[in-house]
Amino acid sequence: MWTLSGGAKLKLSKDIPLFFDGNVRINCGSGVVGEGFIVATGNIIFNTGEVTATAGDDGGLVDKEKKTIAGVGLYSVGGNVEFAVGGSEFSGLIYAPKGTVNLQTKDMTINGSVVGKEVITKTNGINITYKDTSAHETITETETENSHLITAKDVIGKFVNSFDSKDAKIGILTYQNDANTNTFDLLDVDGAKGLIGGITASKEDSNNLGDGLRRAYYLLKDKGSKSSDKYIVVLSCADPNKCTLSGLGETGEYKTVAGNAVNILPALNVTKGTEYAKEILGKINEDTEANIKTHFVDFRFGEDLAKIKEIAESGTNYYNPTTDNELEFPGKLEATMNSISTEILGEKNYIDASDVIVTAEFEDYFPTSVNYVAPTSTPVFGVEVDNAGTVDDTSDDRYKIKKSYSSGTIDVQPYGDKFRVKIKDEEFKPSRVRFMSLGDKLFNGGSIKFKIKNADGTEITKILETEKSGSIENVVIEVLSSIDIR
Image (cartoon, rainbow, N blue to C red; front, top):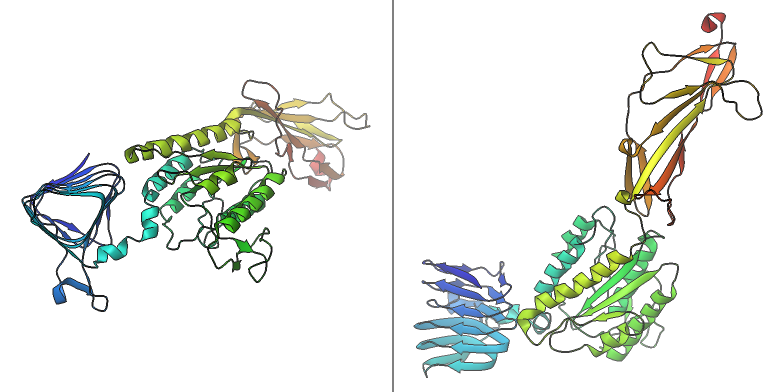
């Protein structure tokens, strides 16, 4: 239970609506004024004075042509709105579509409207005069149908946050009439979370799920790493009723290639919208190279979305977290998304940097007639010099210099579906050499060889795209005079 209390008036702002997950009790002795919204998923309970809109010129008119007055909006998504006050004047909208509006007050004058499954009044001193208010214009029918958006955004944030910020790349796409208005980027976890706040309820009664699936498919196919795990998770509270066509006219083929949607079927048509979504989903399922799995979450309260279920059951995963108790919905949706993230993380076939042990060895042979001279101090960093080896088909003894690196001196970071391996900077004491003849002396640079094992020491058996060796640039030293070879 949330509680707002105090002796002063609670002043609402139309630009800053108040949202509460659960029940809220308002105990502001001087009442509530302003022009704005109080929204709760549960009950809204008033133990306060008057609830009025801000009075202005022309008796509070905010739109002279429409004769709309300023209003306060009280919106309970799944609970009741209750007034337990001595008397009150209210301007605005009281909206409890799934609950009861209980006006337990001695006298109350309402300029606006009251909507609820049931309306209960204590006495006959309730006067309701219907008027358009700014609160009525703020809540549209579409926003009412998408009343779970606040809960969904919170759960989406937790879902995104369940993935490792170093490994995961996430895109967030929305769709209405089409899916053109998106960034079409794959971001890290923090970047993806930054997009969630911008998700808004559709202002149209349009749901082009097929276009959303099409754009998500090509985003993962074109920008995702080939060997990475890929998933599309769809959250929908409406059946598809729009489709994208490949050419002009209403009878053309569905668009299945990449690019913006240009030709959208003008009329709402659930049959074609469903067919289009199925065709795109079929294309996704058939592309074994892209290897994209899909999950559909239907969170329309109180009912199955028949077409979403039909689409999902054509070969993908379908979830319906709805419940008869509205207050249980946030927990049900979060549990559903948790099960999806757990499944995704359990299926991963890429390798985390923490899952591997990387060692490396540098090896170089000095040119013929170049002798190694020990430095004035003891060699450091495990450099080993061996003059007993031979190279290629020559029988000349050549000095070999080696350096081994353990995991502690190697930095391993994921880079898309590959590894970026970097040997940490070290200070080497220079090797001293003596040139025994004139002419060019080619130092081939040598190579760095990496060995990669699982954390338990076993050999890597998974596909791992990474550079297996590196090299140091060749160096040519020209010996010109006998002074150089003393």
